[in-house]
Each structure stands twice: as C-alpha cells, then as structure tokens.
Length: 220
Image (cartoon, rainbow, N blue to C red; front, top):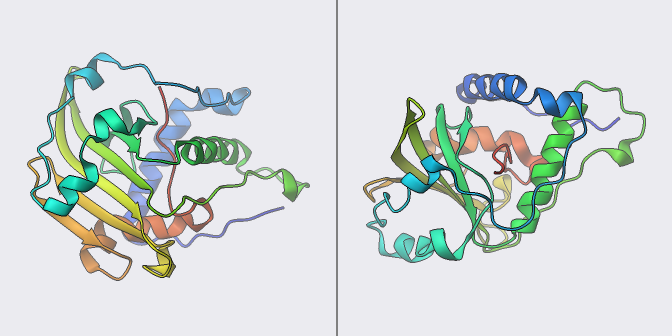
C-alpha cells in the first residue's frame, strides 16, 4: 500500500477539516459511483461567474500586472466558481497560463485518491499518480465572497508561479503571491517568508506528492 505522510500545520488544520467536511457532503457521488474524467474544452459559465467578470483591478506592481495581463481571455479556466474550504471559506475560480493537461490529470488523481481513502490497497502501482508542473506555469485563483447565492464580491487574486530550479527547493520552486481586488500587493514570497507561510505555504507544504497544489477545485 502506498502512503503519503503529511504533517498538518496547526494554522491550516481548521481550513483542511472544513474543506474535507464540505467535500464529503458534496462529493457523496464520488464515493458511491464511478469517477468521471474531467470534461475537455471550455467550461460553461454560470450566472455568478458571468457577473464577476472584470471586477479585479490590475495589480499596481508593474511586473505582476504584466504577469497576469489577459488571463481571463488568454489563459485556460480549469474550474467553475466553487466553494473552497481551504481558502478562508471563499469561492474561487482557477485559471492556468499553461499545462492545463497537468492540472486536469492531477485533479483526476485527487478525486481517485479521495475515493480510495481508507482502503487497504494491495496493488500500490494502481494508486493515483501526480504530474509535476513545468517551469513558467502560473496557477491563478480569483476569490469571491458569495452573498445569498446571488452576488459575487471580488476579494483577491492568489497566484502560484513555478520558478527556476533551486528557487525554493522545499516547496517545489513555487512562488506564492496574493493581490487584493484593488490591485495592492498582500504577500509575495516563499516557504521562508513569514507572511507567505501564514497565508499559503504552511498548508501547501503538506501536498508535496501533488507538486504542492491541492487540486480540489474543478469544473464546471
């Protein structure tokens, strides 16, 4: 049996528990039936997602503004507007600038891993495997507060940027960035930066076997 051992940091344990509880409640069909492959092609746009468009200001940092320029039109959206217990009970939409095939593969592996949780699997070779993202990958999450299921208030953009080898070997060379909806920088750092650790990396360090990405958000 293949085990992935993770030491859960205290500051993310509550978020992890909430996220798993919600996944259990909403994901019963995953446990009681066959997991379906993620859909190919553009994901549908629901009313809340359509309403939320273009309500984030451009980052005030010039380099970050260039990094995310055109992400809504030029990048691929790999999730719908979904609740995320891992992101402070907010709802998120995920975009990637490249390697959407890696995200979809790893999302499927996550679903299979969730379904197999607690099983005494005799064949370790059949356990889900995760792929590593290439250098230059940017994973961007728009975060919203949803009121009464009718309005989506933009809160922040969270980015994971895959940097060159050796940038942060403890964290798979990912840089973590968060930008307020008004364009102000909130944090930018690595596993050694206290602010980055408090908001992001202490939780993501638990997901080494997934290239440090949770992959809980999917379509449509």
